[in-house]
Length: 225
Image (tube, rainbow, N blue to C red; front, side):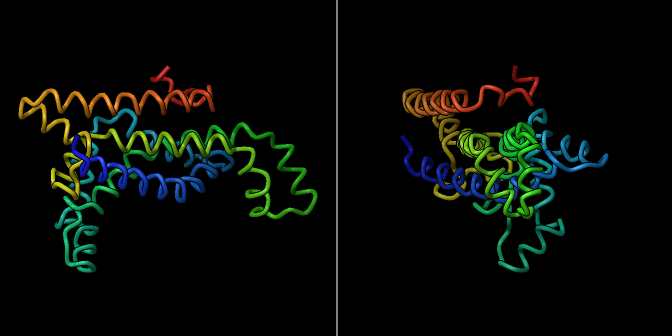
């Protein structure tokens, strides 16, 4: 097995999960409890990676972070490096592509909370922040765990976006899925089979854990049922 590629995949999945939980939680909270017509538009944007081909999404991310784009020029001016085909660029792409896998379970968990408990907390003088950490977070605990596990697992197995934005740089952007692709291209099916089997077992264990936590997690994704 390519342990360097496995290390890159695990590092990418870890930081993607951390970023998604930090920034996805307030977004999910607004989608669950907010009001206004703009919420439906944001929900559609969040869910877009579920139906959009990864190569299409990867192409647009590549164009948006390239040296001719404002984001790419700003990053190059600050760091002196290009954002595409770097670990940082790959991290940005992974966060965008895995966004629904973190936000959707959190929205489902937040919407499942009995609002009478929130109203009781407010009547007892609890502020919004205290209510969130003392009432909402404990009640939505399985949702946070599901979001973290799905985000991590989905990032580990991603291929199309990784290839488009990260390329194939050993030790930098060469992930497990890219390593399997390379082994197949080299007709080394035994090595590709061992790595693919490890990914298959990993995904099976992850899904078993997720379904044991929240059986309704897929309810927000009709195409998965």
